[in-house]
Length: 427
Image (cartoon, rainbow, N blue to C red; front, side, top):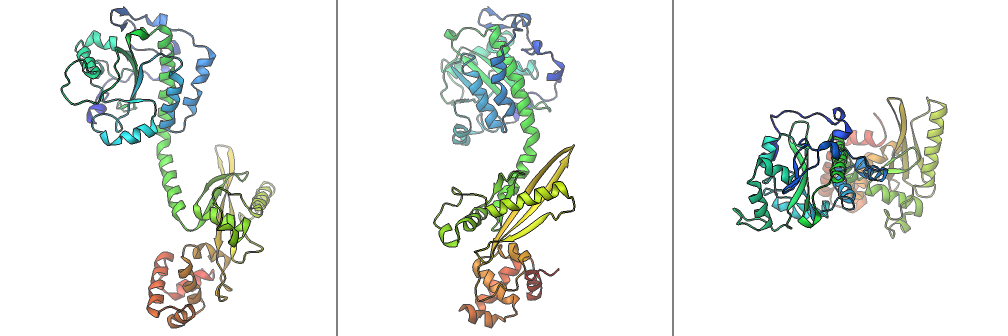
C-alpha cells in the first residue's frame, strides 16, 4: 500500500481546478501520442466544446453522496460516450496485491468495474510526471519503453514474474489519476481498449477531461463530509441499539431516523397491543396522528411565540402506560433556519398497580429495563423489601437481589433511595 501513497509525495503541486481554464483541462502533455505510431492531437485541437447533454449527464456525479455512488455514476456516464473493452478501477485499500480478501466486497460495491491490480505499468511514468492527471499508454511509452513488456505480461502474452489473476486484454488505455491534497494516490480510473476501438479522439479527451474535474470535485466533497458521516453513523447505530423508542422527524413530519423500538410502539399506538404483534411494524409504519398534531401545534406556536414550551408529552387514550414526548429542536445557521423534532415513546404495562405513582418523566428511563426488571424497580420504588418483591412476583429473594444489582448498573444509581427518586421524577 505504501507504494501507492509515495507516488505523489514530496513533489510539486499542480494548479488547482479553479486556476486552470476549462479549455486547458486536458492532459499536461500536449504533444504526446495516442496509440502506437499515431500522434496525439495538440491541446488546441482537443479543446472541443461539449454539447449540453454531455454536461447534464455529469450531474449524478456532482450530487453523489458517497464514493461508491460516485463511481457507479462514472460508469453510467462513460459507457455510452467513450468506447472501451473494459474499465479498471484502482482504489488503495480495496485493490492491488495486498487486498485479496476484499473481492466479494468489491463486486458488491463496484459492479461493472475490473478490479485493478496496481500501478506497475504507470509507475515509472508517474515518477517522472508527478501527480499527472490524464494520460495514455502511448504517452507512457515515450518515456518508458519497458511499459510495453508490462502490458504484455498483464495481457498474458509474456511470462509473468509473479502469479497474476487473468484480466481482459487491451492494447491501449487512458488513465485518470486522482490525488489527495497531500499528494497521495486516491484513485485511478483506466479506460482500456483494443486496436479495433481506434485511438482516443479529441472528443474523447474533452469528455475525459470534463469527467476528471467532475469526479475530482465529487471525491473532494465526499472526503470532507466523511468525518461527519462517520459520526452520524456511529450515533445512529448507538441509538438504534437502545431499547428507548426514538424518532427523528423533519419539519413536515418526515422520518429521518427511527429505531426498532420506535416502529414497535408506533404500531402499538395505531393498532393496539394485541394487533400490533401480528404486523411487520416497519413495513406498516405510519406516524400516529396524535403525534403529528403535536408537531403542528409546536411548529405553529414557535412561529407565533418564541416562549412556547419546546416539548409536550401525550398519553394514548386507550392504552394505559403508552406515552410519547415530542421535543422541538431549532437550528439557525448562517441565516438558514430549520426545525426538527425528537420523539421518544415509552410503554409501561400496568400490573399490580405498581406504576400508579410513577412520573411520566421516568417512562423513558423504565423503557431501558426489561419487563422483569421494570416490575422489580417499580415495586422497590413503592418501598417493598426484597422478600416482599419475591413473594409478589413468585421469585426467589436471591434472584431479586441480583436483578436490583443489574438495575442499578443500567440506570446509574447506587441504592434504592436513588432509584425511588429517579422513578418519581425527583431531582
